[in-house]
Image 1 (cartoon, rainbow, N blue to C red):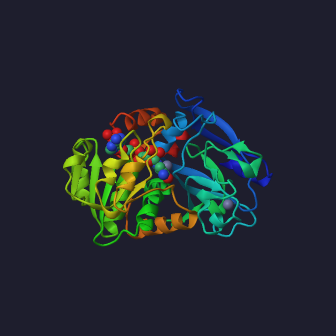
Image 2: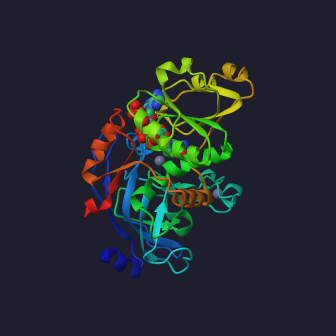
Image 3: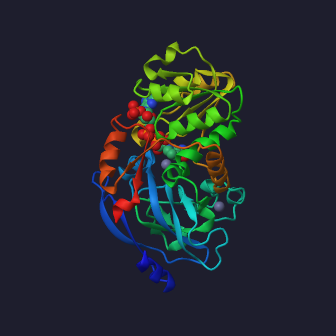
Length: 362
Ligand code: NDP
Ligand code: ZN
Ligand code: ZN
């Protein structure tokens, strides 16, 4: 990173290398690009680990709308701070830092002021990749499948030196995405929680809900990961072809499902006043809608969507995870295995989270 430090000194753009796709059907290949110069409130992070979230696949394959190419996905980032701007307060060189799904927002609207930056009311949330950066001349953002990132310190979380960084990376999306709705729905001792979709995000929901004192159940397409679920403390794993036979009634069901499904099947499993929280976001053409008539006749039940969580809550989630040793289930891969990981994640051959070891980029 000698070259990048020289560039910082000269207030020049920062050279970066990553893995990108050129189109929705292309394979990943090496991509050299530059990031904006280090601003006075920015930090430069050498990326050490980047998790692969299913949102990366939806984005790279233009499943939610046309992507911006070349695209370097990755919003589960953990690494080491190697340079700081003059006005940076939270970090010093050598610290560990994490970056999730966003890298900036207006900081002035009600949502930003209450640290719900993902909902910036001025529409200025800058997502980590596949987004135009309002604050830097609308240049495209590039994510974590790369060797470094420049980010406003307010959009990075502090990570203690003794933390297992490869386990920290997925917390920046999978962690906060599940922690936030569990808190929002006030899950605690005695709650009954169902987690639909037991992959990288779902497993974090299971672990947090158990720690918060809930009784936890999993809904999956098959029993492939039943042993893992039971070992974690899950009461039962139900397969989705038998939802009609489930006798339990839930306070909260968290759907992390990334494919087509019928949401009312889960609403029907809620207690009176129970909640269905939806975080999984299937491709646009498969995206379920809710039958309003069934909902009206659903006895006070609530359905809500949830999008990651704000920066303050992301730091709280990270501190909670480290204090309670709640970590994702990870498998380290090299940059040359990203395509293979995508294939496994979309064909039912993956277990939980793949994490790219950025040492393999050198
Ligand atoms: P993974 O691919 O790691 O896991 C998805 C899991 O869902 C897999 O275990 C898969 O099982 C299972 N699944 C697929 N279809 C069904 C179905 N019809 N019924 C039950 N289970 C099913 O993905 P992630 O966990 O990384 O992401 C999940 C979703 O959450 C994605 O749509 C992603 O975009 C979204 N997301 C949303 C966020 C937010 O802020 N709202 C943040 C992060 C992610 P199998 O092995 O059989 O394929
Ligand atoms: Zn994600
Ligand atoms: Zn705002």
